[in-house]
Structure formats: C-alpha cells, structure tokens
Length: 70
Picture: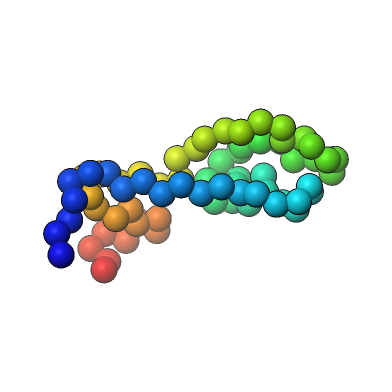
C-alpha cells in the first residue's frame, strides 16, 4: 500500500431535527465557539464550513496528538 501525497479531507454534515443539539455537538467536536445556542427553533439559519482535522501530505491526522501511534 502506498501513501498518497495529497492531503486527506473528510467532510461531515450535521443534519437533524430542530433543537436536537447540532450546534452543541459542533462546538464539542471543534473545541471552539461556533453558532449560537438558545432554546428556540431556527437559531442557526446558515451553513458554515469549519476544519475539524487537517493533515499534511497523505498522513492521517491524529486528533489526540499521539505522535508515532499506529
């Protein structure tokens, strides 16, 4: 098996019913403040794109920062 030199990209969409915790989940996964959380329907009414993990040249990203872990 060969490793590609191209960066690895993974797309994830959060789609669910109203007030199901999509923005809260996105905040947890990204580790930063995104969107607005209120106990009201249709608070987040736009689509935004954020980078969850980035890798360099064909290497798998390690979300926990364990270098050398396979």
